[in-house]
Picture 1 (cartoon, rainbow, N blue to C red):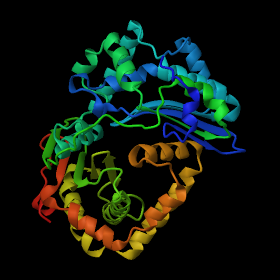
Picture 2: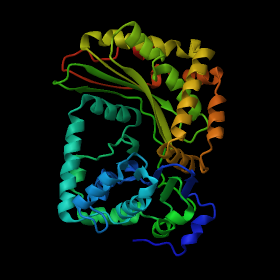
Picture 3: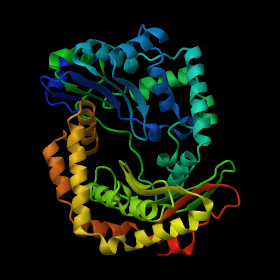
Picture 4: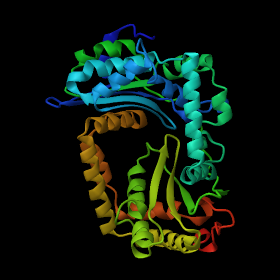
Length: 422
């Protein structure tokens, strides 16, 4: 366990302890975010952070597996551990009367997860089963392939879970050392608490975590854009799963709100162009969507859909048409509809304890500042149609597009000229 020499040091405007007091609220959210994710793992240890995360809520502290499971059930809300490309986290959502138990389970999970041989072996088998499940899902496979098509062998393109070979090589000693040296390093943790909570309520937990005023990630090189095309055969599937990707901005960029508005108009929501054209007008697919994958040193805009092989050529032709004309005729009304939906969704999420905590952590890690709802709303509302058109002209270009398709053997999965040269 790592203990700070002075528990009171965090009181002086620390960016590692984010306390947002909400008097009168019955619910509370408390979580620890670790500024080390799967992309920071060494290539030969890919999946190690994810496996440590699995172990945090198996057994921790002095609790055995069943007593920990009972405590999770008694808390009644959401007790979760997760790993992403650039972070690992543990969080508890519960009612304010259960705050002591929430803090206790969080402390034990972060500082004292199990690394007993039998627990490591069991969670290794669980992780391998998870990997098999992902490999059996054509949507998951093409989702991983598009990252490789965009970013090649960069760490951002590696699966969070690792590979069978790397997972099998992770011993208790390797996992324990990774936990102590990489995940519990000073400057690598944030504690976020939202609810009717005072600083005195969390002082004991703060004193035990390795918290410092400045939180920083391990450095990563910016990815080089590859723009490749990958085709995967999947004999057992009945549909072709397709992904396209275009370079976007890093998550902390001042242009991230523009990218978010562009994505929403293009393919997020019921009135989005791709959804209306391919689903509502033509009935070519059950769903088509866009997503932003924004990282600290890179980003991409993804377009995804699935359809039957006989409809694939028509679907990609219409996708190409929509991408081609987007920068030419995106309208002020479309921008206004997107902004109204986004700002209202932001306000709704910011009034939940868990949402507020997540927003606060993201602002501190990505921009070095606390979350301010009005400032964030103002940044969104500053987006204008000219900025959306300009970004679309810059990134929605066929010559830089990455693509990945996964479907039945001998199906027409090649991208036709209508989509690669619009």
